Image 1 (cartoon, one colour):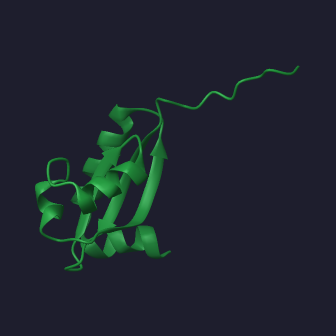
Image 2: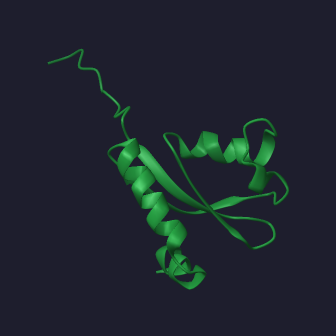
Image 3: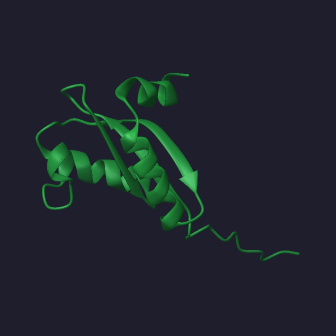
Length: 92
């Protein structure tokens, strides 16, 4: 069966946590974590207002979900966590 094409999952969404230069944490969602981090670090038009003044940022946690809806719900859950609980996600 030659000629098979690998299909990527275009509907995959990620929730991610960034650690900013000031040691604060930022949580967001995206379909492309690498692109989004690049935007946070280098693009004033596309970066979140919060991260623009806290560069550089680095990814400390990411979680893959099957839809934007699930990613948004998970983002809200994570944002409600206390800092210590967020740190448990990416340190353990």
